[in-house]
Amino acid sequence: MLCFALYSAAHAMQAAYKPLLEPLGITYPQYLALAALWAEDGQTVGQLGASLHLDSNTLTPLLKRLEQAGWLIRTRDATDERQVRLHLTAQGQALQESAATVPTCFLDRTGLDRDEAATLRDDLTTLRDRMRPR
Amino acid sequence: MLCFALYSAAHAMQAAYKPLLEPLGITYPQYLALAALWAEDGQTVGQLGASLHLDSNTLTPLLKRLEQAGWLIRTRDATDERQVRLHLTAQGQALQESAATVPTCFLDRTGLDRDEAATLRDDLTTLRDRMRPR
DNA sequence: CGTATTTATATCGCACACGATTTAATCTTA
DNA sequence: TAAGATTAAATCGTGTGCGATATAAATACG
Image (cartoon, rainbow over all chains, first blue to last red; front, side, top):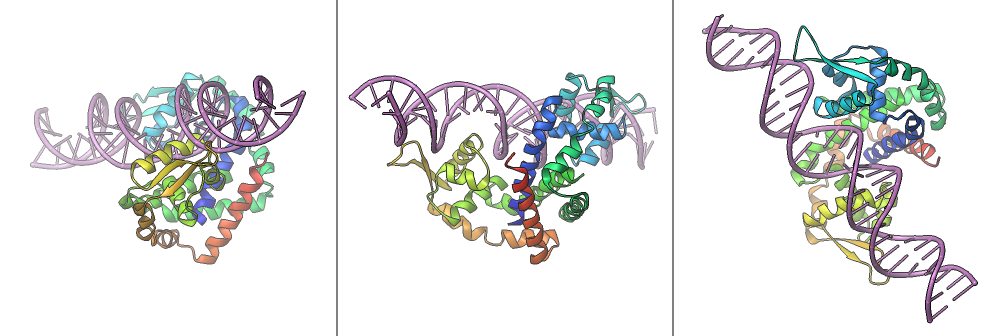
């Protein structure tokens, strides 16, 4: 069953990330959100949701927790008051340094070399995009 | 990022299953539990948890919902009262028939042929087992 | 035999996911 | 420009996952 392999591998992946992220005080989905902001600060909730494939019903509480923890600030866009922009705090930017080793540590844990990991990543991304539309 | 590919593909997979399972009135994790019981009825919570990689903190509420819905019955093992055995009801057994087309429908949705799906499944299972132990 | 330890579930609390709905702001268009 | 449609977040409810703890039954051991 491909589906169960995917289901259980995804859970195992989050479990493997836990010891890496716990010292930083963030969860895996929070890490994804912060990583997106490290790549581009000042995104809106909608932009973040588009890249993470998550909607505001999931993101709003998660982002409030990140704000509560001091990693970012949520501000209404001055031009379009419907949008909420996400800005990293100094602490949130500094966290990128602390998390710098995380991807490599995780890759080590998988036992895959970079090429194998890239191939599997591409296969999964293709699969995901085939399943999404309808 | 392999991790995000895995994360988002797993979510997309559950989304792809939703229209197949919703008519049956079950969720994807519930489907996994029932599928395990279709393969072998009368398992204990612990046995089911071992095959699904889930603990009783997740399974107990899920199984209570399945019992509530009439798919199975939970009974204490007479020999060892610590264990809870899971027995499909007639309705629960009959559901296997209704769900018979689900795996093929899902495979169609992935756009993969059986060999590609099997290869990806094995890669994911290997990856999962590499990440699990420590 | 009786107490300590181990084992199998259950319970509790918190953090996602996501369908459905709500609210508020912006855009459309007659 | 005023009413209706659209859009962006937020809110609400339900169902997982999982760490930590509790409970009760079975086993080990002195």
